[in-house]
Figure 1: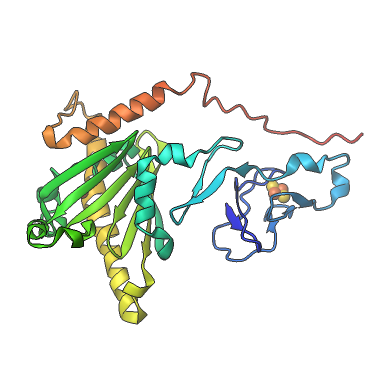
Figure 2: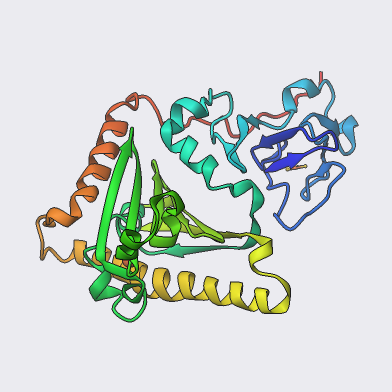
Length: 321
Ligand code: FES
Ligand SMILES: [Fe+2]
């Protein structure tokens, strides 16, 4: 959970009570004075310190200082809040984002506001879902009646920064660039720009709105997909603006992603099980899939063998003195 206090200080915590692990906030809260656990009512300040223990005489000798919420590293950059999911980890955003971070700042995301965020489970490996974004080869076929109306034959240029990938897909008007003065060129007028932020985030940039997709692996064949759309308020004013935004979201989220890209990814997942293919074959226009896979392999090779055992001491009873 992420909270900004009255002084503007931003903090992030694991959304887990330190008593017996209940989820503290549901995500519907807007303004809180403190975090109150719904299970037994322990109270934490917005800075994460344990402030109150219900019937504290039942916990003789409890060292409260050991029961503050687990804080996560948090930072703000380019209009976004960045959180490291591991308590105590070091977060060096400049090193992580590199030149891609400068790009993101140029898009002025800090001037955008949230339209909507959805979260659903897809029955496919997280990599299969992301890989649908990494090639334009499928666009004239799978997106025959949708995206291919706007894009020029699925032509994509890419740039790598470390494990991150920037992609630019030429729009149908791309050659109009030749008629325009290069001083007036704005890339989003002629191309859609995407960022695959390693490992599991995909940004889609449009002049007046941005889609942020994230993929959280739950199992080898199951992934939580979140999609958040941010928009520029001045571009979508009043009721007509709201209707236009809702239409944009449905088109992108339901039609293109869910019913086209991810439906195919779920089919591919099923196809992995029936033994038809020992391997998949990549053409020259699908090279980014190999690059993405190489980046994953390199990241996995760098993980120490001891990581992920996740030993938890489940119960620590309070023993009366
Ligand atoms: S689990 Fe939160 S108060 Fe008990
Ligand atoms: Fe697609």
